[in-house]
Amino acid sequence: METEALAHAVIGKLRAAGHQAYLVGGCVRDLLLGFEPKDFDVATDARPDRIMDLFPGSGRVGAHFGVVLVRDVFHQVEVATFRSDHTYEDGRHPEFVRFENDPRQDVLRRDFTINGLMMDPVSGEVLDFAGGRIDLERRVVRAIGDPDTRFGEDHLRLLRAVRFAARLGFEIAPETWESIQRNHALILKVASERVRDELVRILTEGGAARGFELLDASGMLADVLPEVAAMKGVAQPPQYHPEGDVWRHTLMLLEQLDHPTAALALGALLHDVGKPPTFRVAGRIRFDGHVEEGVRMAHNILHRLRFSRDEMEQVEALVGNHMRFKDVHRMKDSTLKRFLRLPGFEEHLELHRLDAMSSNRNLENYELARRKRAEFSEEHLAPAPLVTGTDLIGAGYQPGPLFSKILETVEDAQLEGRVQTSGEAMALVRQMFPR
Image (cartoon, rainbow, N blue to C red):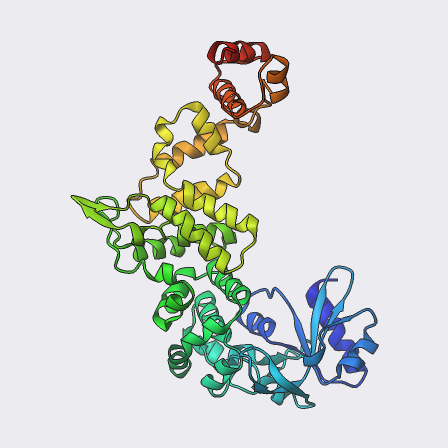
């Protein structure tokens, strides 16, 4: 059963049992905009225990807040009891909630008018208690009620407003925007993981460049990513970067992102993060060591935002290797093949394309690397070793630091086609590393 069909079935069963039940929130917004919703949520006047009775096997994911997860074999739907929230003290959770019978009360405690719509999936009737339909038509993100109150209740809503405006191409209502600018520093009180997830969504769901322009204008960019905010006004050599400073260059990369992976999007955002601290003028503008500094800074940023080790490694690799494409045409075969077999090389290649298209628009190195990557099979890029450590021991070599040098030398020769058999490889070892 598809998630939408499951939501409809849940609503049907709740109504058959005498309860009110509607689709609610983002799924209604997306349906009215003609988008396919990712998730379907249901709001009802049924209390959590009643929902659990009607749907055996379901589980409470927010018992205090009246949220129950109803599942079938493959899909799940959040079913939430109508409620009003009271006395937020931690910038995230209400101190207590009151279950309600009136859907209007449930809507008025939500974040934005475009997310406060309810829909009867059978008739298509929309319940709009906060002016959400008008704001959809006007393409506006507007807080429900007093924006200072809404952002004070849940500080993450500051980032969510930016995300919706960027992804949907909407404007932020003036009073809501002014409140964001007044309250931007509240984002510093939000858990790093929640900030991370919203930033990734801004980067990957569409409209990333506009999202980061809004983050900058709101004050939140300097709050959560001061290293990125520092890119503004950092000049670049015009012969290589006619587009302007590091900030403009980075925004141009973000403009080209088309629902990328999180790693690629973060690579695009952070590839030049090492330039501001390494800026100097010596005859011309220089950024000596900006790649190494960028890797260090990217590591600190990603660690601060609690990314996983695998995500950190790939983003750091993207930052650390993005300048190597300029040398592709003169790399030895062994160096080139090691470069082309980097994990996730397609992301490295795409980052270079974005980088080139956001500066001098020269794609010669991109095309050469793309052709070479297509030309070589995995076996050519990472062939089975002709000599192993065991072979070296058998030939009388003592284990130690020299082993890695020997094995690397043999692999170089293998990748360059100078040796093709184990015998040829051992002959090379004896010639270059006599015992």
